[in-house]
Amino acid sequence: MNKIPYEERVKTYTNALIAYGDRKQMVKCLEELAECQQAICKIILGGENFDHLAEEIADATIVLEQMRLLFNINDRVSQYMDFKVQRLDELLKK
Image (cartoon, rainbow, N blue to C red; front, side):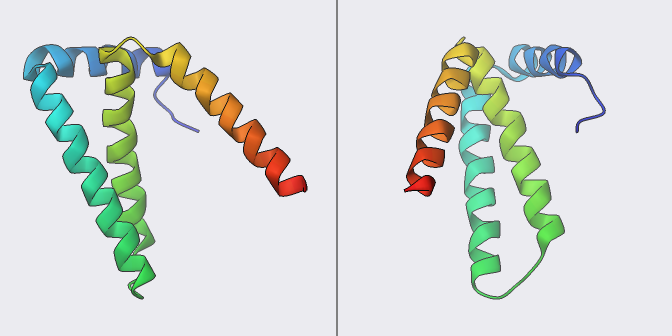
């Protein structure tokens, strides 16, 4: 559970988008996703640095949340997540 309420995080995300610009934050998102991918690959190859993975997941989540705001798709993302989790649950029950 996050200690900083979502509403406060949204203010910070909005300020980051304003300060750095939409394009730079989109590039930052791609960079953070790549770093998360790298951390997962390192674990697969035997380097169990879960603290590093947790940090990279946090970074990726922060920029993904900014993208949800930037493109005004927060509700759509939530709907897709619900649908896909439900579908996964149904697949697992088969």
